[in-house]
Structures are given as C-alpha cells and as structure tokens.
Image (cartoon, rainbow, N blue to C red):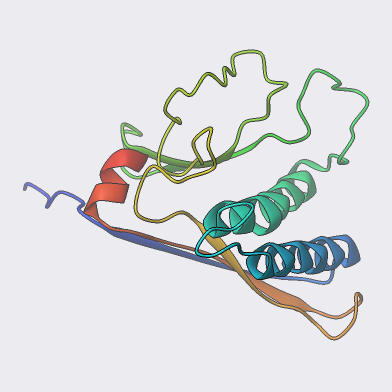
Length: 169
C-alpha cells in the first residue's frame, strides 16, 4: 500500500509551566518584541518582526525546555565548549527517519558554524540576515499567569505550507 506524500504540516505543541524563570524570560522577550515593533521607521523595523519573535520568544522557550529535559543549567560549567545559545529541535516525519523536520538556532560558538551568508540549514532556522527561508517559521504563543508563581500556558505553532515544508525537511 502506497502512502500519500506529505505536502503540508501543522505543528501545535502545548505546555504548561510554573517556572518563574521561564515566565520572566517570556515576559522580558515580549517587552523587547513590543519595543522593536513600536520603533518602526516607515515600513521597516530595526529587526524584522519574525526574527525578533523567533529570537526573543521561541529560542528562549526551547532553551528552557531543553535545560529542564536535560537537567542542565543555562551556563553549565562542565561543558564550556557547548554554546549556550544553541538549541535544535529534530522531528522524525517517517519511521525510517529519512525525513527530519528541524528548527532552532546554532550559535556562533559551535565549531562547524560558518556565518558567510550561506543558506540556513532548513527553513526552520533564520538565515544570516535574520529572515526565514520559507513562508513561515515556528512561533511561541503564551498566556502568562498574573504572577511568576502561577501556571502559564505556552504553545509552539508552525504551519508549513508546501514550499516551507519542502525547504524544512
């Protein structure tokens, strides 16, 4: 039996957390995102809106979740060679793991990283100019509790149209 080829995909992960550190980081990121959006000079912003949201919401969120899962601190001294600003999500799209969806950030401190205007690894990463390679990038939506100790909800959403999916696998 032959399967239909995957032509589009919607990812929607929901998380809840009572972490005061995550709450504060997402709240601080929202302030940075708002300040960037308000500082527009005509139709352009100091940092592209998608790039700012990616850097100030998605990457800190993924980094925090990764540290929780690995029980690692943000500045783990036992692994100084590992870049603190690197986090990658890999999702196998088939049983043989031939098709892997990836997104995240690879820091400049990673040995094989070269920032010479080369194309990004996939559309799930921002290119060296801070723009997505596809039509969309993953985004974090948050519903923060009234205070740092409350339960906040977070969601990672990414709707991949055929063009973005093809550039992301």
